[in-house]
Image 1: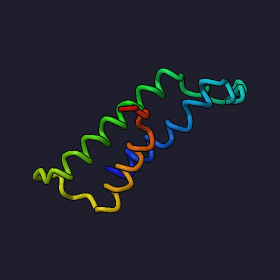
Image 2: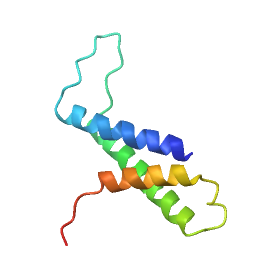
Image 3: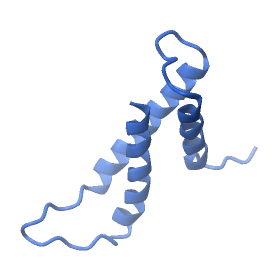
Image 4: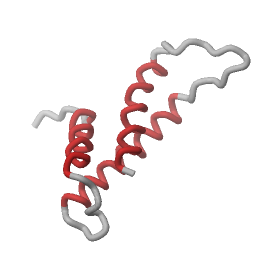
Length: 89
Protein backbone atom coordinates (compact mmCIF):
# COMPACT_ATOMS: atom_id res chain seq x y z
CA UNK A 1 0.00 0.00 0.00
CA UNK A 2 2.87 2.40 0.70
CA UNK A 3 4.12 2.20 -2.88
CA UNK A 4 0.64 2.98 -4.20
CA UNK A 5 0.29 6.01 -1.92
CA UNK A 6 3.76 7.21 -2.94
CA UNK A 7 2.77 6.89 -6.59
CA UNK A 8 -0.45 8.85 -6.06
CA UNK A 9 1.40 11.56 -4.18
CA UNK A 10 4.08 11.92 -6.85
CA UNK A 11 1.55 11.86 -9.68
CA UNK A 12 -0.63 14.52 -8.13
CA UNK A 13 2.42 16.65 -7.35
CA UNK A 14 3.18 16.68 -11.08
CA UNK A 15 -0.42 17.19 -12.18
CA UNK A 16 -1.22 20.19 -9.96
CA UNK A 17 1.14 22.62 -11.73
CA UNK A 18 -0.04 21.40 -15.13
CA UNK A 19 -3.69 21.87 -14.24
CA UNK A 20 -3.01 25.23 -12.57
CA UNK A 21 -1.30 26.66 -15.62
CA UNK A 22 -3.62 25.06 -18.20
CA UNK A 23 -0.65 23.38 -19.89
CA UNK A 24 -2.67 20.26 -20.52
CA UNK A 25 -3.86 20.17 -24.08
CA UNK A 26 -7.57 20.24 -24.75
CA UNK A 27 -9.00 16.83 -25.42
CA UNK A 28 -10.96 15.85 -28.47
CA UNK A 29 -14.64 14.98 -28.17
CA UNK A 30 -13.83 11.27 -27.96
CA UNK A 31 -11.34 11.60 -25.08
CA UNK A 32 -12.01 11.96 -21.39
CA UNK A 33 -11.26 15.41 -20.01
CA UNK A 34 -8.46 15.79 -17.44
CA UNK A 35 -9.50 15.75 -13.78
CA UNK A 36 -10.32 19.04 -12.11
CA UNK A 37 -7.64 20.85 -10.14
CA UNK A 38 -9.80 20.63 -7.01
CA UNK A 39 -10.08 16.84 -7.34
CA UNK A 40 -6.32 16.41 -7.80
CA UNK A 41 -5.58 18.70 -4.84
CA UNK A 42 -7.92 16.68 -2.60
CA UNK A 43 -6.31 13.44 -3.73
CA UNK A 44 -2.87 14.91 -3.03
CA UNK A 45 -3.93 15.97 0.47
CA UNK A 46 -5.33 12.50 1.19
CA UNK A 47 -2.15 10.80 -0.07
CA UNK A 48 0.06 13.13 1.99
CA UNK A 49 -2.00 12.50 5.12
CA UNK A 50 -1.80 8.73 4.59
CA UNK A 51 1.96 8.85 3.98
CA UNK A 52 2.42 10.86 7.16
CA UNK A 53 0.36 8.36 9.13
CA UNK A 54 2.24 5.37 7.74
CA UNK A 55 5.65 6.89 8.47
CA UNK A 56 4.68 8.11 11.95
CA UNK A 57 3.03 4.88 13.08
CA UNK A 58 5.68 2.62 11.55
CA UNK A 59 8.57 4.51 13.09
CA UNK A 60 6.88 4.55 16.50
CA UNK A 61 6.70 0.75 16.35
CA UNK A 62 2.94 0.43 16.56
CA UNK A 63 1.75 -3.13 16.24
CA UNK A 64 0.46 -3.99 12.74
CA UNK A 65 2.27 -0.97 11.25
CA UNK A 66 5.65 -2.73 11.06
CA UNK A 67 5.27 -4.43 7.66
CA UNK A 68 7.04 -1.71 5.67
CA UNK A 69 10.68 -1.93 4.65
CA UNK A 70 13.13 0.68 5.84
CA UNK A 71 13.74 1.73 2.23
CA UNK A 72 10.02 2.38 1.70
CA UNK A 73 9.79 4.44 4.87
CA UNK A 74 12.86 6.47 3.91
CA UNK A 75 11.39 7.16 0.45
CA UNK A 76 8.08 8.22 2.01
CA UNK A 77 9.81 10.50 4.52
CA UNK A 78 11.94 12.07 1.79
CA UNK A 79 8.86 12.79 -0.30
CA UNK A 80 7.10 14.33 2.69
CA UNK A 81 10.16 16.46 3.51
CA UNK A 82 10.53 17.62 -0.09
CA UNK A 83 6.89 18.58 -0.41
CA UNK A 84 6.61 20.26 2.98
CA UNK A 85 6.57 24.05 2.89
CA UNK A 86 9.79 25.63 4.08
CA UNK A 87 9.18 27.20 7.46
CA UNK A 88 11.73 29.67 8.77
CA UNK A 89 12.24 29.37 12.50
